[in-house]
Image 1 (cartoon, rainbow, N blue to C red):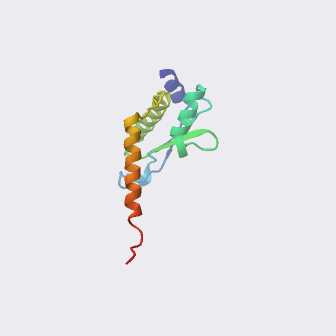
Image 2: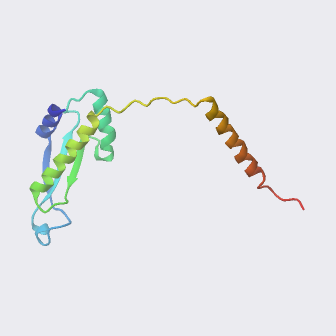
Length: 134
């Protein structure tokens, strides 16, 4: 997992853009927002982790296979850079976690009978909602 994060940090490209939000007049002069781009094909991930990362990235994944993260919540480039890298690390960690297998459940005989009885009662209740003949 650590090797994947190191590889991601090594190939990540950062660009700084003008940001909206906190900073007052300074925001008009300094490009503090960070746009972090990581090519997921260059990470050389195992197929299961690769597909989970694609699912987690969602619309942050572009046609070129790059995950694009924007961080613009802070007033400084360094704080935004840390936030973007932390979000990337969270995504990769989540993709590396193996999802738990769902254990099939079986309803016992009493549970089946109870369910059918409640369905029957619900149907009778609905049947009584019909038109009333006078």
